[in-house]
Image (cartoon, rainbow, N blue to C red; front, top):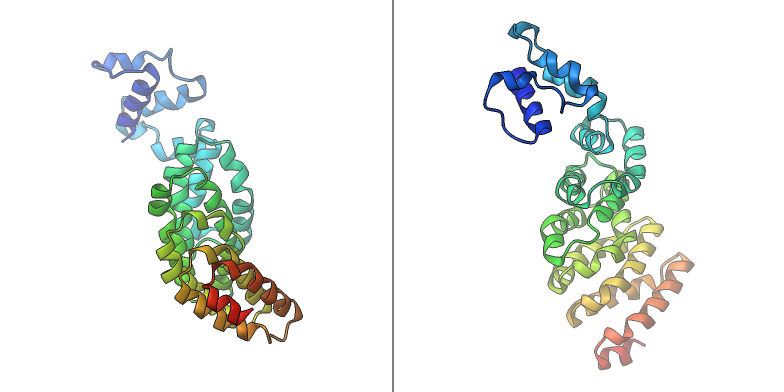
Length: 265
């Protein structure tokens, strides 16, 4: 409703509610850039009133990084891959200029939802974690962990899903401290371990490196399962994977039961 928007603008800029229609003629507090459109919203004849949608789209007052960012995320499914990659590549820098509260309450959930439903590229994982910086463990558990779990437990069958898995593994050190031990042991590791058998050697090696970050949270039983994967990777056709497997065994030895460590090492 154009008239209602005009009243809202008047109240916002005067800093209080209005009680009489003649107060709408008081324009001293209305920004000059908005004044003409404000007056058009309040035209006497309803059919001549300015369309609120056009006001938001055309007024330079509404052209700012916050509005542009939220609008882009709202219309993400309509963007092509090049636009998405450019947007998410620059998003961390954009968020630095925005209020932390807005980033965490508005932008962070939008990124998580876009990743969950596949409308955001793998490149969005890093901005999501950037937006989550500074969250308490409880807030992280509520706002970010469900997305991470959904993405990890989703089978990496398509190229896009595989790229998301890679992005998660590359950034695991940025979020693992927020993950409860039980969740890491019973959910994340079983999901991650499927990548040990992936045909892509890069993904196998990346999974190998990521396990080191997760190892302190795993139970002895899960470490036993891990050792089974590592025994296979010790004869991997890729020399770097065989070498990194040996290095990993030495690094996780302190987390193994004494008898297990002696037997394996």
